Amino acid sequence: MVDQGRGFASREHVVGATTVVELSGEVDILAATALAARLDEITGTRCPDLVLDVRSVTFIDCCGLSLLCRTRRRIEVKAGRLRLAGVAESRSVLRLLRLTGLLPFFDLCLDPGPDAVYGLAKETAGPGRDDACTCPPRPEGEGCPATPDTPTDNAVA
Image (tube, rainbow, N blue to C red):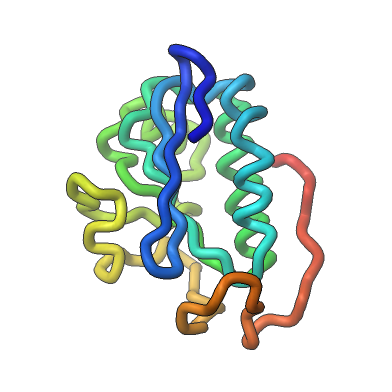
């Protein structure tokens, strides 16, 4: 768990091959700095499967948005999958994604229920997206056989 005092916290758990990171509070420059290293670890594997649950995010600024975009890009390079859960419940995240025109570029977990992974099998991909990684769940440290090892993009969006 990453806790930055009263302003931001994150909690992480794994369900099957999916890592779920629940964000809460203010996702600003301090939160993005604290969270970036952990998201880099998660997105540095082959075919990462990540759900970011943003339903408890009360504020997000350009640094938080940059972190979301960077995470999305790193996952695409590794032929993985990123989904955002709870966007409809977080007015600040929904508003910022709409204002910037980035909402269509993220896969959304529809009707995630009380648990961020509820209904993950039912969610739909965003426009123009396909699931490049069709690998079954794999043991820790074992790579994706469908994707060659590719370098990650460390630039911030």
